[in-house]
Length: 154
Image (cartoon, rainbow, N blue to C red; front, side):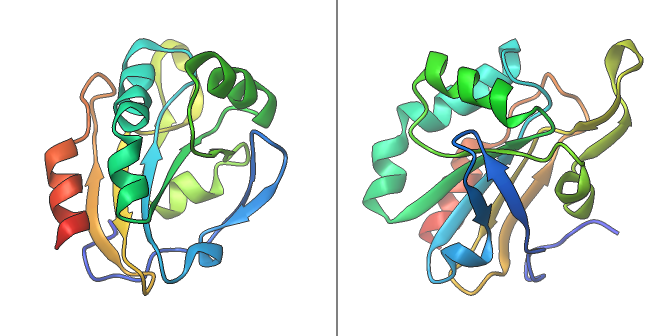
C-alpha cells in the first residue's frame, strides 16, 4: 500500500557518500525533503538533484534538510556528489529496503536491471509524518517542485 500524507514516515539508517550512517529519526524536529532517484550520472536524475542544489539556499533558509537516495553504492554517490557539487547528503539504499518501504521501487527497470529506485519525492514534517508524497512511474518525469515547496510552507 502506498504511503499517504499523514502516515508516519518509515525510519531508516543508510550510509552516505561520506560513509557516515544517517537516519531519518536523526532529523526529528526538522522538515526533510527526500528525493529518490534511479541512478547517479543519468540525465533526469542529475536534473532532479541539480534543481535541489540550485535552490538549496531556500531549503537552508527554512531549516529543511534535503536528502537524495538511490540504490547506487556510497562510492558512486560520492563521485556524483563531487562532480555536481551537491550540498546535501546522498544515501545508498544498496540493499533496496528503504526504496521498497517508501513504495519507490522498480522490481525491473530498463535493460533488465532489477531493483532500482523510482523517482519520488517526499516531504517529512518535524514530527516524522509525511506532508507530501509523489512516486513517479515514468523515470523521465520530474517531481513537482512547486508542490514540494508548497508542502514545506504549509
